[in-house]
Image 1 (cartoon, rainbow, N blue to C red):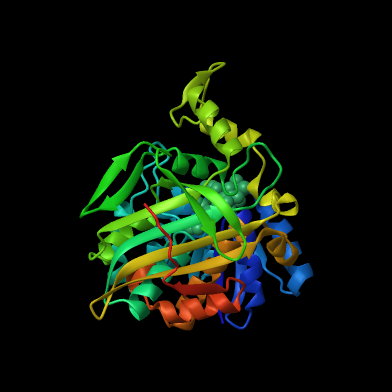
Image 2: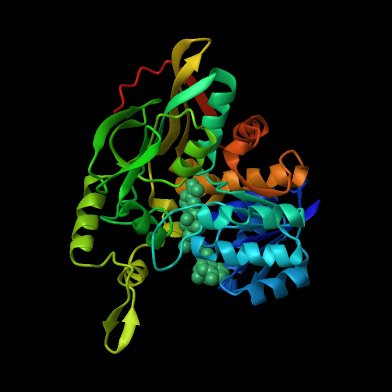
Length: 402
Ligand code: NDP
């Protein structure tokens, strides 16, 4: 029954708060802190109405290590679940080290001025966390997160060696807006406009963003979608931890309207992250664009359809070639009915809660900085079935992927 501090009261933070409250036998005391405390209070009221659990709230600017240290000193949490933005990862990790607090996040650190998506900054904390006897769990969302677990589970139970990995993220949901992102717009647009990289024969090969696509038919009548190859951060850790991989790619579905808007916005400079002069002040075009776009945490009531996210893994077992597909399908409206959230926040928040549960219960607890696939996937996969993200595994799915 340990105290957990959730930082970030956005779409994902809302789901994490609800889900931790639902497992109150493990999450003894929950505090939700963010830059704007009123958002925390709103979520805390929602949680109380739904599950009768009272969570505390606090205000913090997580860009400031001093402010974080003061808050940790006051609250003395066992661990932090960081669902603020990737820019805050390192300040929160620094404060954790200073105050002896365990750490978990769902997205790797990014400097504000360059969208690089690299683990190197956080991997550099390995010795410090080991020496302090603290654990940092990186990327415990859906992708990264559940996708790392799907890969690790397949590798553990179905293969002697894995050779090819395709992570396929389909969002078949429709919110009715011509253009909106389903998680933080700034982070989402930085990610999808970044140069594509995929793993091939021991190195990352670059190509233009969105330049490679194929058609993918999801199982369970989710539908057929165009999926586009892009870089995603779990490719870095998975190719490191599974050196037998010869090819690893990440694919995401995008609708034509989303791509048309993104292209136009890019062409006129609205997706840029370099500050520009505007009426005597400096503004970052993408941050300005974010203020105009729908708030992803408010998309829940209007999003209909399903997500289908999974991993196609190929390799060998007992000298025979084989292939498996591990995936989850989640209905946006089911998520809304349960937690007033759309499925992207839901599918991110549930694995964050489960990762924290693995740490609190001790099954994953060990000092150091860890990516998900370095830990035993079995208890995590069991909990996905239990807490709202049931998955299926299909042997020889027969996909013909690039
Ligand atoms: P939102 O923008 O909805 O929420 C982010 C929250 O963080 C806001 O409430 C914001 O507070 C708070 N925040 C931002 N800066 C600070 C700061 N300096 N100090 C304190 N709080 C701060 O984002 P999402 O909920 O959509 O995403 C949250 C995280 O989840 C992101 O890092 C995202 O990359 C990650 N993610 C991971 C996925 C995965 O599958 N692994 C998928 C989707 C998202 P305020 O509103 O007060 O400004």
